[in-house]
Length: 258
Image 1 (cartoon, helix red, strand yellow):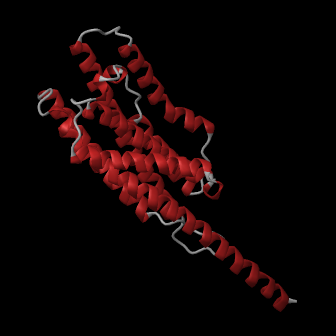
Image 2 (tube, one colour; image 1 turned 60 degrees about the horizontal axis):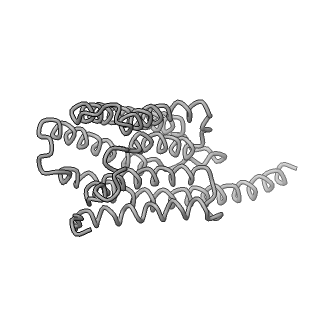
Image 3 (tube, one colour; image 1 turned 135 degrees about the horizontal axis):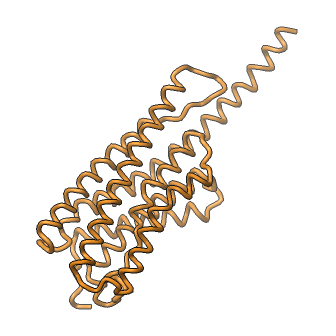
C-alpha cells in the first residue's frame, strides 16, 4: 500500500469517476428521470467513468495488489461514442432499432474477446501483448471518430429538416450537442497523438502522458451529466407548454368557425 501513487492529478480524475458513477446510479434508479433518452446519457457517462477507472487503477498502482488489472481490460472506450449516438438519436426523437444497437456493439465484443485471450496468456510475450493493445487502441480511435462524424451528420440533417417553424413540432436545441462532439473529436485526436507517442517512446514518463486526456474526460463527465439531463428536462417542459397552447388555441378557432 505504501507504493501507491496518489497525486493531485489522479485525485481530480477519481473525483470525475465518482461523480459519473453516482450520476449513472441516480438516473437508473430514480423514477423521476426514467426515460430511454436519459438512460442513454447515463450509459455514456458510465462507460466514460469506467474507462477512466481502469486506467486510474493502473496509474495509482492497484495492479500490483490485484493482478487482474495487469492485463485484463474491459474495452469501455468502444462504447462511449455508440451510447452517445443512441442518446443523440433518441434526443432527436428517432427510434433506436435493435439492429443498430447490435451493430454498434460489435466492436466492443470483438475487443473484449481479444482482451480475454490476451489475459489468458495465449500471447505471452510483452512485445506481442503491447502490439495488439496498440492496434486495438488505434481501431477504437478510428471507430469513435467515425461515429462522432456520423452523429454530426445526423444533427445537420435534423437541423435542415426543422428550419421552418411548426407549431405542432417542438424542435430540440442542437448547438450544445455539436459543442460536445467538437470537444470529443479534439480529445480523440489528442488520444491518437498520445498513442503515437507511446509507440515511439514506450514507458517514457509512465502513464502521466495520459493525464490531460483523463482529466478532460473527467470534466466531460461533469458537463454531459449536468447539461444532458437539463436539456432533456427543458425539452420536456417545452413540449408540455406547446401542447397546452395548442389545446387552448384550436378549440377557440373551432368555436369561431362555428
